[in-house]
Image (cartoon, rainbow, N blue to C red; front, side):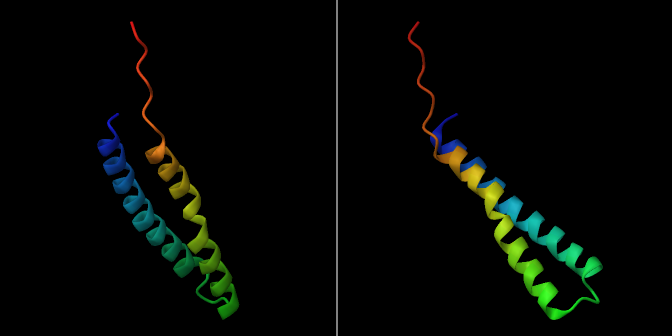
Length: 73
């Protein structure tokens, strides 16, 4: 895959990941943590705010990987 295309696909994936992850994390917090103490909300949003970096890290690593060299025939 050409480098420019790989970076475009990776960028779209990261933006989609961030939006979907934020919606899911907020929905879970709304339905599960509605009556919880403030510190439970703080811990939850600190953890979920950091955990999205793990899949993003794999996408970025894939984007930055050099293209495979073609074998001479």
